Amino acid sequence: MSTYIVMAPPEFEDLAGDPRQTDRLAFVPDGFSFLAFFFSPIWLLFHRMWLVLLGYLAVTLVIELLAQSFDSGTIGLAAMIGSILFALEAQALRRWSLGRKGWRVVCIIEGKGVAEAELRFLHKPGQIPASPEAGKDRQRPAPAAIIPRVGSEQVVGLTLGPETRQ
Image (tube, rainbow, N blue to C red; front, side):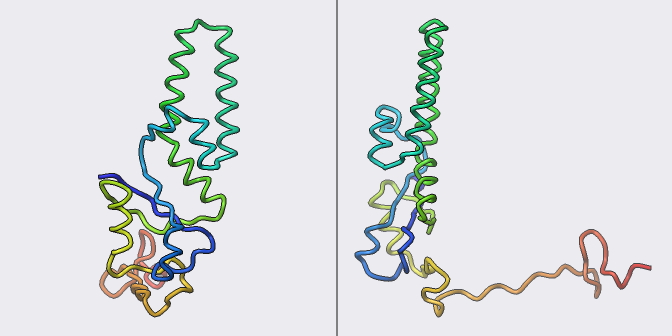
């Protein structure tokens, strides 16, 4: 099972709203991205991650400049490790880029693939609305605060309340 982070665009109002709006949800997988490993610049351009692309190109340029002063085996190993690390963090960088554009995390869901994750998310019973304003009648009431007590005295930090201190 893979874990997917469901992200909604800034103008997305309610999960129980128009089905055409639910097509705009992004299901971002959590984990290693093989496409980002093999085709990093193309993957970044496809997902419109411009700042990350600039950072990737800067790191690649530094590795190429270091390649001139070291032997090719060491730099090849460094480039491979860099590619593996980028592929491990590519989806997290995608979530970060979407978050900078105003997208918000709606849910975290599991599935064998994107299709199963979408079905599980869209057919989830008792779904909580995406924003506090949308669907106030469906929100759960906030639980009452738990106040620790020793006997009849309220505990404050590691001591009893101020009335017991002498």
